[in-house]
Image (tube, rainbow, N blue to C red; front, top):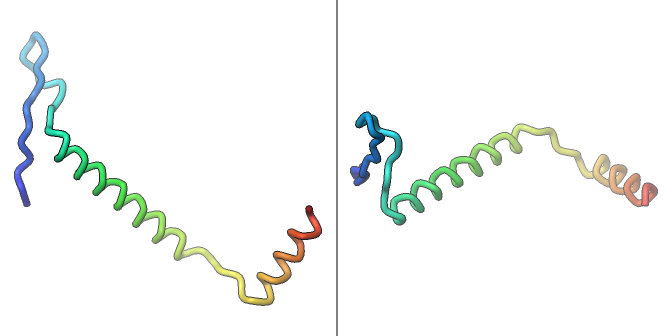
Length: 67
């Protein structure tokens, strides 16, 4: 794995309070986090129950009546 080049921002007491990274690295991290979130969402959705054909037809008939 590639080492992330970072610069620390310090306060008056010389305590680290922030990190600065280049925009390319930030965008890669952001994409990884978004992909991970999407993956988790898809995983959760796959665990839900699905309607069979007849159940789906009945469900959609009910929608037509509601409108």
